[in-house]
Length: 111
Image 1 (cartoon, rainbow, N blue to C red):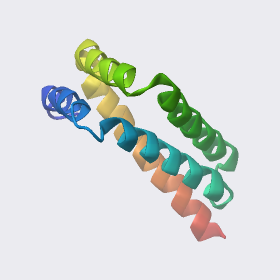
Image 2 (cartoon, rainbow, N blue to C red):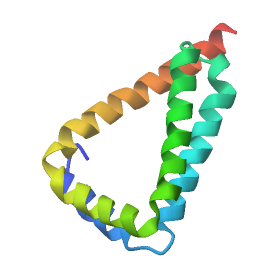
Image 3 (spheres, one colour):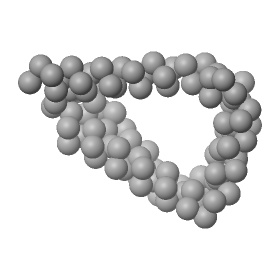
C-alpha cells in the first residue's frame, strides 16, 4: 500500500470478485478477534488487545449481517473512494503492526 496504492486498490476490487471473498473476510476477522481475546493477558496492554479483539468479532458479525452482496459493493466503492489515502493508511498499518508485535512479544518476554 505504501509503495503502490493503485496496485492495492485494483487488488481489492479483483479479490472482491472471488467467490470466497466474503467468507474469507468474515472468518479471518472472527479468528483474529478470538485470538486477541484469548491471548490478551499475555500482552503489554491487555485491555487494548481485548478491545481490539471484541471489535474484530463485532465487525465479523456485522459482515455476516450485511451479506456478501453489500459487502462486495462496499469493498469496490471504498477501494475507489479511498485510493488517495492508501499510502498513509499503509504507513499507519505498518506502524500498528510493529506496535502489535512489540506489545505481544514484550508481554511474553516479561512473563
